[in-house]
Length: 514
Image (cartoon, rainbow, N blue to C red; front, side, top):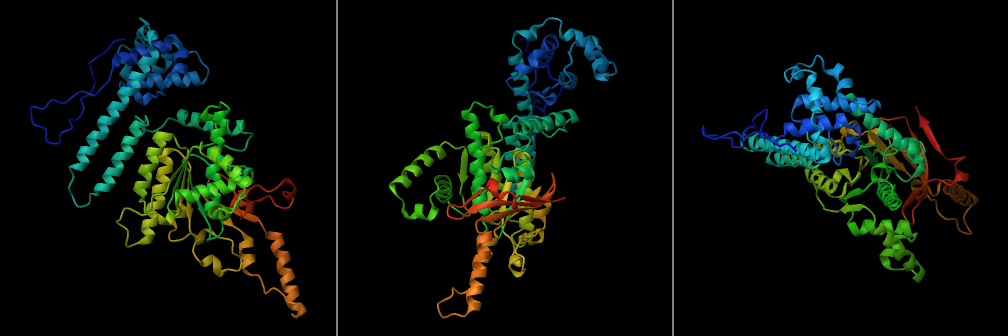
């Protein structure tokens, strides 16, 4: 394999105060390796299928090589055979290629066939050198930014930006800031459609574990910010823990079945709990999966059979790709840094934050809570796009709900900032009518009470029976489809949401609002 010290452009030196004797180092690159690799593909198109690392045109140092590789991928995508001859029409007017000898250069790429000896090694070297060049760029920007001592500079913001940039390098995102070609975007879209097709036509993203919800929204889509809101007692955290368990359990099950994790609709999940401790969340999930009430678990009021069921559930749960961070008082910058680390170490595919109002901003907007919440919601949306995962953020609602006769939440009830609604791709509200009906219970009639008291209590009991154990997930905003309601079953004893039984679906399904 040919090695080269020849480089097309010098790197900017790291020292901001270079003396005249300092020598600028060349950017790391191997032009001959790029040429040999392209020659190997043109001789044997199957080389592309055997790559250990995903190469993109931006990983090539020589721009002409990047354009050749991009055209090769486009032709292979059309099931065409790619050779110097089939490539020729696309490069006859390429000015940069003319400087290298014109379209005859395409034939010279295949002249000696050296690349066929070790194409995977060549590809890895091209990839690694691209990451090193990206690291040089990040380091240069980092030094230049650190030398800026003006009052407008926020050091903590610079640190967060540096960590984000380094994460992209570590994640192999050399050239991540480049615009994507439509062909590349189309391939990503087709991949998502294929996943939805293979799942039976319902789930394009990550599963919620609730079929009725999956059918309504098509699963949790990558890069989406989902706001899950509700008044206290509605079950926001319960639904979030249910979804966290269901997504992680689906990934674990698919792994055990030997399915490629990239084709699974499950996801390793990061749960940032700013309200409850990790052991409290674990107790909730144990209660859900063992069928034993969480209050009985906390007080130890369980039978031997219950303990055996609990032991069995805990064995399964211990293998889950579910990671709980219960650090209190996290800033949005701190949460994003921790999420990046979890993505790098455990390849998380879903982030849940409980809850948004307990996060802190950068500190500049502490005198204005609305601005701070706006900063936090933007930060969560940025995190979703940066990690390319769905982010579910729980949120409080204002007390305005309690003033209305109909207690169902509306978008205007989102607390403290309209930017939450603006930044969110989906907004969900959890509503349980039985919670409010239970609070309206009239006096229990005694033997001497008049018929009106007995009738009032009987009417209340009838209403309670109608709504008991039912919950609504109100989809108030959805960029990908219509809004509406999904009705579910809620078992308060074990804080578990589930789909309605088949016999109930005739009366309770989901309502659409186009």
